[in-house]
Image (cartoon, rainbow over all chains, first blue to last red):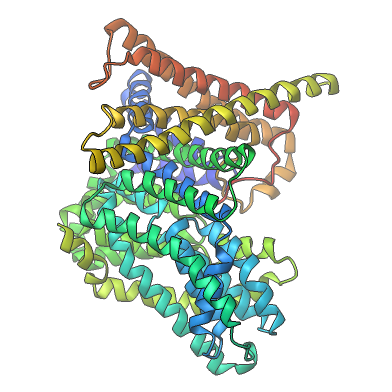
Length: 431
Length: 172
């Protein structure tokens, strides 16, 4: 246990000092393993892990879903999504904010990136909210929180990474994310309703959408809906694997972009493809580092020492999950989703598995927790993204704006904790 | 210290390598997408999936990762926890940069070494992929060469200042 704790301390120290997370994780894993088993064995282990994982067919889902998201952003579909959502929700008080939540959920379903969702929605949803004098707090907070839906609603890169670390079926994880994703969208909408009821001035009334524009917007969102249904429906019915779904999704997204008048030049294609490639590489270097690090942690015996501790403390499976969630919430204040998954899951994996925890349910919980971390201080990445797109809005206003949504996320976490079928019902139908 | 003329020449070389890597990785990723799509369509509509498609996709994944790593290294687009790093760097920027980039370089060299070792070992044992029987030594060799190129990009990126300190990929 002491060796592993020193390793963790070294890794945290390097990360806080600004060393690149992937490289720091790999080097600590390499050195830790080498000190225990010799550096020749450590080199062999690194070589094996790097090759195995960089040529793992199941992981090709990562670049392909990233590409799908890049194409969707490039298709400039967000305005149609937003207007279509407003067409349905505009009659309610706070309709523009409600539409922001729904559009962010819809965009997440075909994009999969929290950053892209928050940045895109900031550009699309802020101007109308500003022009109808919505408060900065409500507007920017809703956008930042809406962006977090990207990592729960499938396709989701963090769910893929969790699947790899915990050796869980990625397709099942995606399907498991649907109901919690919808639950969060609902909770966020309730949140808007409560905020607007408490402070009606935060969301003055806005006129309904022009009928012609309404028709056009709904027509514009149909291809996205179809793409989502094909990708998730294909996984759900077993027609294709998650990897195949990602290829179909990326291809479909490219077709949508072309049909909408984008991706018409080689330069545009190169920009999108190269963008997806760089994101893939940066994710993989963290992933490779994590796998090497987890080899060191396993060798140190820490996961089994933790198992003994769980026995000694007589923790029930539920208490164990609760304990891990609390640690994840604390980690979420500093680390983003992948960092939490990489550092936390391998350590607690044996204890969770032996306690008979449903690892699909746990995966959803841990991703939900990391979602909270995206909008909590001191490092709420989505808050910073919204701030960078909307420099006129004060950071404090955005952080205050996301507070009700943090409560909604915690409520969502409690609901999924207390009612596991929210996450396990749909995958259960597939098993 | 890097002289301005060296820096200018280095920037030119780096730009060319990055452009080459962008074109290569874009082509491979596009092919990967098409192959996956055609494989599924072939299976359902024509009853004939592409032979060895999953093996080809696995190889392409490695090519995409290591070609992309070259671009990411050149621009220092890696995930960083930006909490106190700026304050620490302010104390001794040069020492800080050498330490941070030195560790990244060390890890990249380690990866290049293990990949070349794997390529040599595969050549000695004449290992091949299971379905298509492609020589693993060539595949590992190309991947190792791409990884080595990414080290070159990293060094040139440092020399020319291509990777700005405030421009990291923070989240996904």
